[in-house]
Image (cartoon, one colour):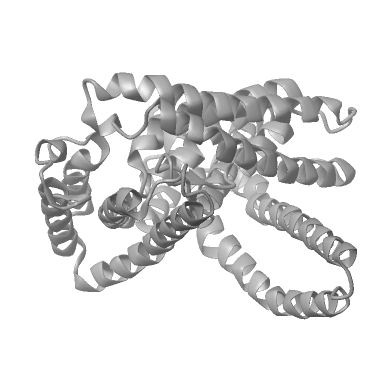
Length: 242
Length: 181
C-alpha cells in the first residue's frame, strides 16, 4: 500500500480522537470511566493500525504506548491517593479519581499508537533522498521541510539516546555521592537540611548542564546543513532556465 | 533571493525545529499528572523560555506554538488548543521583553521570565475556567475542565513555571558567559 493512502486512512481514523465525534455520542458506561464509544474506537483504531502498518510495527508501537502511558496513569493515581491520605477532607476519594485514570489510560492507549503510526508511515528518509537528488529542483517550502526533518531526526535518534546513555552512566556516581553525603548527615537536623539543600542545588545544576549540552548538541550542525540545503537547485530557477 | 538570506532563513527554521523538538521531548518525558484537572506537570517550558531569551520573540513564539502542542497530541489531545495559544504567547512575550539580551544586565531576562510565568498560569486559567466550558457547550470534546479544576491547577502551573524559569535562566547565564550558541 502506498504511504500516502496509509497516511490518509490514519488521518481519517484520527479525527474522532481530536474532535470527540462521534465517540461522545456513545457515552453509556461499560464500567465506570470506560464508555462503549471509547472501547469501540480503541478496537477500530488498533485493527486499522495493525492492517496498515503490519504485525511487527504494531507490536513495537503497543509496547511504546504502554511505556509512555502507564507511568503517567500510575503516577497520577499514586499522587491522587497520596493527596487523599494527606488531606482527606479536600482531595477526591479513590472512587472519584479511579474512573478518570481508567479513562485516561484508554485515551492514551488509543492516541499514542495513532500519533506514532502517523509519523512512522511517512518515509522521511526516502523523502530526504528524493529531494537531495531531485533533478527538477527543490522549492523553498521543501527546503524548510528538509531542514526541519533533519534536525528532528538528529535530536530524536542521536542527541537524546546519547544524553540518556550519559545520564545512566552518571547515575551510579551520583548514588555513591548521595550515600557519602547521607552517612555524614545523620548527626543533626541542621546537617540534614544542608544535605537536602546540596541535593536540590545539584539537581538544578545537573538540569542546567543537561539543557546546555542538549541545546549545543542539537544545533551544532544547523549552519552546515543550512549551507548544504541552500545549495540544492531551486525549482523556480530550473523553470526559468527552460 | 540571495543565497545568504536563504541560509539565514534555513538556520532559523533549523533553530525552531531544534527547540520545538526539545520542548516536545521535555514535555513528553517528564509528565506528572495533576489529579484535579487531568492535565500534567512538565518541564517543556524551559526550552520555550530559553529559545525566546536567546533568539527573540518570533522564534520563541513559534517554538512555544509547535513543540508542547505536539506533545499534547500524544495522550492529551483536548489540551492542544490551550497549550498552543498559551505557550506561543509565552514565547512571544518572553522574547519581546528579554530576547537577545546576552550583553545586558540580567534584570530584563528575569522580568521577562516572571511575565512568562504569569502568562502560563493566567493563560491556562482563562482557558480552563472560561473558554473550555464555553466550547464544551457545542463541542463535548472540550468538556474536561471547569472553574474549580482551573483554580486547583494554579499552584502546579505556578510551580512548573518557576522551575522551568529557574533552569532557563541558568542556561541563559551559561550562554551569556560563553556567547550565543
